[in-house]
Image (cartoon, rainbow, N blue to C red; front, side):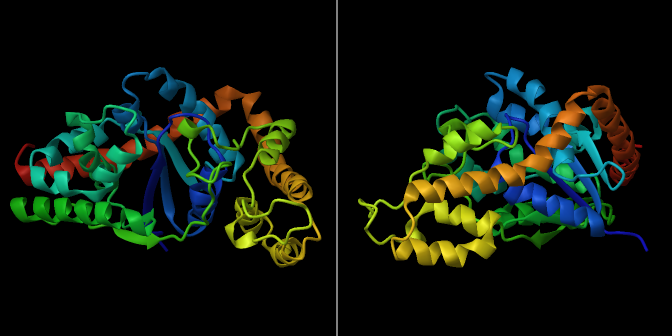
Length: 328
């Protein structure tokens, strides 16, 4: 039985952290069992926000892919590739750019949110405005039936479908396939300071952090602001540390909740316990990471084979697109 196809990716803009693990990678590992998965390092997308200091992109690609594989993305089950090495992405992007109305892009909520989120960078550029069209090309070039997204990304996926339908209607051929969402409810994992986990905030625990670094970072976490003394009852529902227990050790959450409310455990002890849990969770990932780092040629070979597999699909789709348009 042929598996349905899925396309997803990450922008290589730095080291991967726990937010990437619980928000995407854990889901990717499950998806590859039931779908034909294409996972890309989205370096063109990264350039749209990192154009002023693009060196971080090249530095991050290999490191990110090593983390993917260390977390369980298997090259024999999934196709791993670099976006810019599959030239058909940009070919279809240019074609779709010609028929995507400007108003659609300006109204895209994803675009507006990114402008606010990355306000420290000048993203009022032609390239960034076209970001959703490149994302549409990424999906449509593989004729991917499904895309794993959170609810906040649904408007972008609908824009991809609108672009697909406009193409098929304009050229009177059903060439491009409407993608559908695989709605994923990601665990809510905030940064060490209670804000969104982000490299730019410096509030991340990275997948590559050594145990001493993990412990130091966890001990710096903001806890219950209402709990002043050890004898004060805690309020775990507003404590960020408690949220981490819910994600990484849910079976302990009820006991920790009870001990916190009864002031039977202090914040320092609670954070030390959490540090041990996170170090244990990261241990197998880091063991695999160390092994892969000792043979980078193996990773480059995986990426190269992934490029070839991806281009077998993208070349076929682009040929059909050009034939429908009368360009071939």
